[in-house]
Length: 601
Image (cartoon, rainbow, N blue to C red):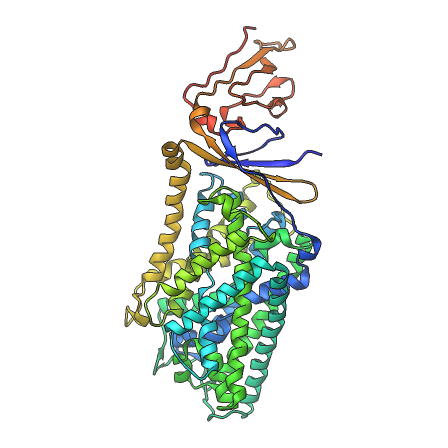
C-alpha cells in the first residue's frame, strides 16, 4: 500500500510525491502520527451538542440588552433575531457544501485554500491571523465570571474580579481537554443538555409572565411593538446601530460552523455533519426568538437596555423575586457559559493545530504536537494565551461589548470571501467542483451581501456619542481589519523574507494512509545547498515521430542526493516538459544555476 503524501513548503507549492527520499541538507524531526480511536470520535448526538455548546453561550443571555439599546424597538429587535437565524442557515448551506466536499478538519482553512490558490497560502495566513489572534473564549469566560458574581449577590461590572474568575474558567477548560479529552467531550455534552433545559425554562417562564405571573408590574413592551423610541439607555435608528446590533446577534448564533473544524474526528463525517448541523441550528433559532419574547414579557425597557451582560439574571429576579432560587439560577447560566468555553477551546485548538501541521506557525513542531495525552495540548495552550491576553488587556470598564465586536467582526470578511469563492466555483466549469450538497445562488448572494454590509457599515460614524462604552466607534473595525492585514504581512515574511534572510525553508509532509491515520513530518531545508543543485535530464529521440525528433524520457541524474522520481514525470511515450518546480526539494526552483542537458538526436 502506498501512502498519499502532500508536500507543502514556504514557496506555497504543493505536489504529490510517492518517493520516500528525504533531502539530507536539512533536519527532520521524528514523524508524528495523528490517529483517534473510534470511542474518541464524535457521532451525530455529540456533533449536535458540539454545535449547541458553542452557539448557546453568553449571547442569548446577554446581548438582548445591546440589541434593544441599539434599535429602540421591541418589534425590530425580534425581527433582527429572526433575520440572524435566517442568515445562519444561509451560512450553514455554504459551509455544508464545502464541508461535505472536503471532509477534513480545519473549516475555512480548507475552503479558502481550495478557491484562493494564488498567491499560495496568502488566504491561509490571513485566516490564521484572525483565528489565532481573535479566536478567543474571552467573551464567554467574562460572562461566566459576571454571572458567578451576580449569583453570589454582587453586581460588579467588568471589573478585575470578574476577569480573574474568567481566567480560571478558561484555564479549567484547557486543562480538561489537554489531560482527559474524553471527559472534556462528555462534560460539554452534559452541559449542552443543561443549557437547552435552561433556555426552555426561560421560554416557559416568559409564557407565565405574559399570563401575569411575575413580581414586577406589566412592562407593556408589546404595546405598539414596532415603534422606535428614545429612552433611558436606549434609542435606535441609523445604519451603524443596526449593523452593530446584527453583529451582536451574529455573535449569539456564532458556533454553527463548529463541527466543520473537527470533521476528521467525526464518525461518518459526511452523514454526521449533514444531519447534526441543521438540527442544532433549527432548534437554537426557535429557542432564541422565544427567549427574547420572554425577556420583553418581564423586563421594562430601560432596565433591559442597561442590564448589559446579566439580562437573564434580571429576568429571573423579576419573575421569582429576591429568593434564593432567583439567585441560584444565574449560576446555571454561568454553567452554560462554561459549556461554550469548552466547545470553543475544543474546536479552535484543532484549527490552530491544522495551521501548525502546515509548518505555518513559529515553532510549528511544538504547536502541532499531540503529546503526551494524544490531545492538542500545545494548540490549546496557544488558545489559552490569546484568551487571557484579551481578558486582561482592556482597561477596567465595560469590556464585554468591545470583546464581542472584536471577536465577531473579522469573521464577516472571512465568510464573505468563502461565499464569493463558492459562487466562483459554481460558475467556473474548469474548477470541476462537485459536492453532495448544493447551495442555490440566491442563498449565496444573500449571505455574501449580509457579510459585506457587516464588514463596511461599522466604518460609518454613528449619530450621537462616538465614544460609547469608553471606546471610539471605529476601534473594533480598524483592529479587525488590521489583524487581517497582519496576516498578509506575515505571509510576506514567511514566504519571501525569512527564506532569503535565514537561508532555510520549512517543508511539511502530511501523509494519510487508507485508514485515515495522518503522519506529519516537518523538515527544515537549507536553501544554500539547494541553490547549488544541478539536475541533468538525459533524453533520446522518439523514433515514431514523423516530424522533427521529439525528446522522450530516458533517464535522469541526481546530484547532492536529491532524487527525481521518474514515475512522476512521464506522460505517455513523450517527455512532458518538467519545470524545476516539480523537484521534491521545492527550494531548488529559486536556484540561479540549474540547467538541462539533452543528448543529440
